[in-house]
Length: 232
Image (cartoon, rainbow, N blue to C red; front, side, top):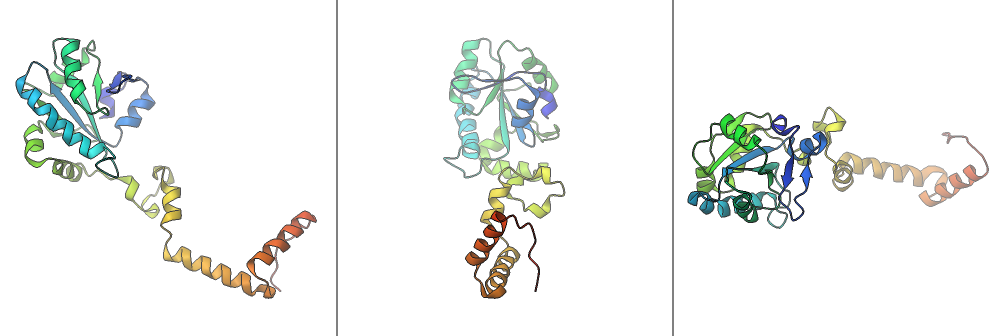
């Protein structure tokens, strides 16, 4: 799915209209996500009626004001408008996290042919591997609302890595960026038992408590004693 937009320029629908034009940026924002390609035009009455519905749908799945953990979902507006002004009219109604292709980019028309889009509005839903999950999800979004995403996620077998335990990753590089924080916050019972055992052992050794042991160790280091603790 990411391959669709490599070597292309995607624009963020924010006030600065920041451009994502490097491979790293494109992969970072599209990889391991379900992708919605929204084909529409401002001169289409049905499109104009659907835009607020889609905007609300996407906002509830991505905006921290509505949901604690934004879903692995991306939305790209594929403009079939006849002018830049028409395209801007649609973009003003869409969420700021929406991406789009510049009006001058003819790739918009190639995508329309590639996905055989004839009637608009159309929302083509793609799995992370690029295969088509839904040829047009407009009616499902109208009918099911955000429950659509749950169905898409199950169909795509999409795994939200943020909520997985460390042991479920064979490759530590696949662990989420919040992994160290979660490890501190959610200690296992084994971790707690080990901590209690250590405190009991330290307190009982030579009748010294933990603070005294720390002070003794610091003095040894200051005096240049590089020896290790030995059991008597």
